[in-house]
Length: 53
Image (cartoon, rainbow, N blue to C red; front, side):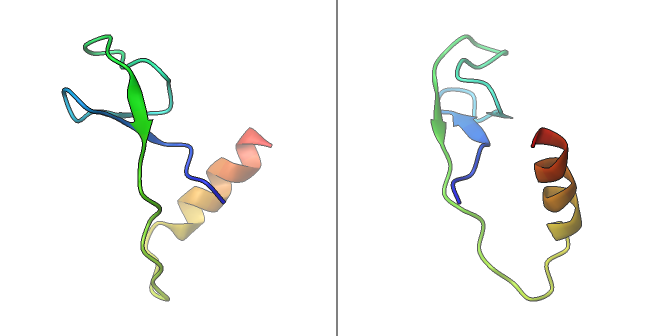
């Protein structure tokens, strides 16, 4: 599964868009999150994934 979140190379802003809303530069894919059994934000990622589908 690829991450849908992207990061602006210029201003380091995280976004879901291809173009940074703050500075107008292109964004790039981020590295996947590290796996942890005590995942604090897992329920939020799963809820977002269900909302998008």
